[in-house]
Structure formats: C-alpha cells, structure tokens
Length: 341
Image 1 (cartoon, rainbow, N blue to C red):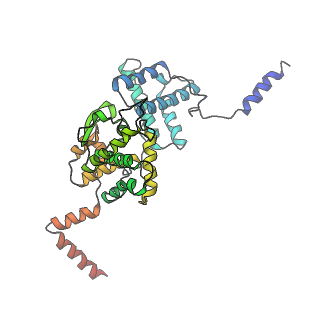
Image 2 (cartoon, rainbow, N blue to C red):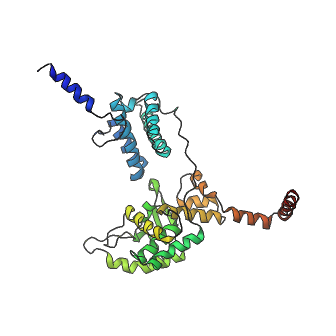
Image 3 (cartoon, helix red, strand yellow):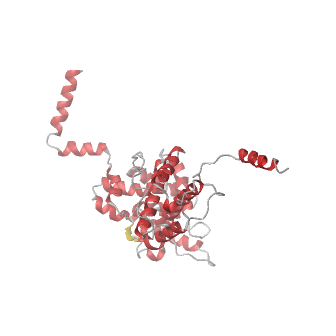
C-alpha cells in the first residue's frame, strides 16, 4: 500500500495540464509582493495616475509575479534574462505588440522606482527593446461625416435623443476623453454652456470649449435631465442614464456604437474617434499643433503630432493655387505624358 502511493501521485501529476508559467489565471494569481504594492501606492498617491492606468500596470506586474513565482524568482530582484524571457513569452503567445510594450513599460517603471528607493542598484529591463508596432492613424470622421453622425439622434429617435445629441456634440466639440465626459459636472459648466472645466490624465485640469451647436443641445437637454434625476439619490453629473444615474463609460460606448451601426458611414465609430475627429479638423484647418495640444490636454507634443495627417486632395489644391510654378509644372506633365503615350 505504501509502495503504490508514490506511483499514484506520479500518475495524477502526469494528468495535470501543463500551463504557461506567466499566463494569468484567476486561481494562480497571488497577492503582489510588498515592493509591488508599494510601487502601485506610489503611482496612485504621488504620481496620481488614472485608475485605468493603475489597473493596467497592476495587471502587468501581477502577471510578472506569477511568472517569477513559477520560475523560482523574486519579481523585485529578477535577472535581465528573466525579464527578457517573460517579454518573449508574451510575444510568442500572440499578445498584441502594444500590450507587450505596455508590460515592458510597467516593469521599467517598477525597477526605476526600486533604484530610486535604494532597493536594487540595476535595471534588468534596461537593455530590452520595445517590439515594433504598426503605426496606424487614429480613426476619425471627416467634417461632413461628423455632421451626419451628429444629426443621427434626431433622425433615428432611439434611446434618448436630447441627451445623445448633446453627448455627441459636447464630446466632439470639446475634444473630450470618455473618462472626462462621464465625470463632467453641472457645477463645472459655465453659465452659457459654452465650455467647462474637466479633469484629464494625471489629474490635470483644463478648460474646454463647446461649439454653439453643442451649447444649444445642452440647453435643450438639461430640463429633461432634471426630470429624470433620482430624488432619493441626486447626481451632479451632466450626462445620466434614462434611470437618472450617472452614465458609465461602458454606457457611453454602447450609445456611440448604436448610432455608429445606424450611421451608414461604413466606419467603426467609437467614443475616442470623436476626440480624434476634433483634433484632425483643427489641424487640417491650420490650427497650431501646440494649441491643439493644450486643447486636448496632452502632456507631450509628440502625441498631438499624430493628427498632422491632412486630406491630400486639399493639399494639392492649395499647392496648385498658391505655388507660382504649379500650373506650368502641371502643363509640362500633361505634355510629357502625351509624348510618351
């Protein structure tokens, strides 16, 4: 009986499915180490990063903790080879390069914090390079498409047209992030609904401006908003659900997707596309990129420069009308083409 027990254990061990050491599974994820918890606390209380960013970094570091636990390493004192293998494994699993690079960024921030606090003297992530990512232009709507989209709430008559029109126009004309939209409060709007103060990333406050059309839509929406506010649990948020509660981020995504499906524009329209459209239209109208940076609340000008793409046909028209040799060059091109054909 005593002899069979080891064989039984061995047989059971063979039957267990082999799992990737770093793959995050609910039953495998343990509490982050003390140093990881301290770093996340630093991000929350000192750096004041957004909850979304904090959750992403926490997820990356928890995944790395599981990987280290299964390979017998301490995440705070892991070697460069361990970090390199972890990143390589993420890429081999087919995880998007953007997500892999974010995980590497999370580790870099963690180790820089450990170095500053004197916990370790080197950065094991320092020599690891980011994966190449496709440089795609942000999704946006052209001016005519945006006008069509903004009219949909009235034309379609679905959901809550007064709210939805105001929501779309405020988000577009103010260049708001979805988190800024849902946190917008009535007390932060100016008296004429021409703008308001929002809290962006890193708790940075800025003033945003709304178009005349957006201001009118807000004035039309507010009375119906007051009628739906819950008497037992009132809210100061500008945009609310049909039940009177503050609208959520998933709720905004659902609203925009519903109208996107009915738009007939043939584009995947999501809330951030309205912010992209705002920036694109300003840049294409000749607005200085640094001013657009301020209006968007970007910390870095490089982020704003994504919007310097232009309608090439418009650029060609400007060239043809302004350059002194443009017509001559065009005529020469046609003449050359005629000779070679």
